[in-house]
Each structure stands twice: as C-alpha cells, then as structure tokens.
Length: 76
Image 1 (cartoon, rainbow, N blue to C red):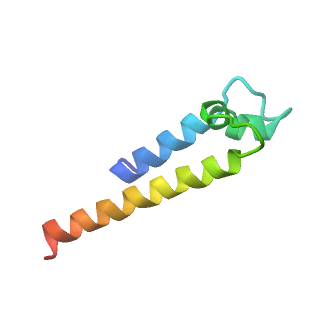
Image 2 (image 1 turned 180 degrees about the vertical axis):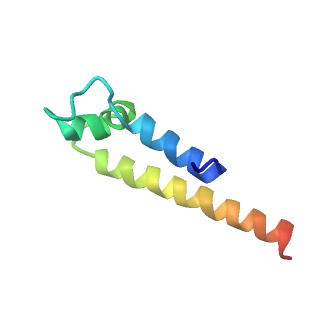
C-alpha cells in the first residue's frame, strides 16, 4: 500500500471525481466523473473546456512551484 503524500493526494483526487450514487454498469462515465462534473462551474456558451484547461494549468503551476521550492531547499 502506498502512503506517500503523492499517493494520498492521487487517491483523494480519484475519490472526489467519482459519483458513488451512479451505477457503473448503467453509466460508467457518470460513475467515474460525476463528482468532478458536479463541482465544475458551468458557464454559458459551452465554455466548460476552458475551465478544464484552467484547472489543469493550476495543477501544473502548483507542481512546478513544489519542484522549485524543493530545489532551493535541498539542491542549491
């Protein structure tokens, strides 16, 4: 079992993306992504894709800051 911070964070992201009320045999997409879909802000005109990209960018930015912080604390 993985108990590193990275594994715990990944498991939390997966669990919050799920919709446990959905039956995966009837609607796998809803089961796998329903929780995530419900938490996303809906925008008029079908701009949900922009929000997804903004969320992905925020995640990348956070990871880069963590790498930079690690570098300055441990390598420099």
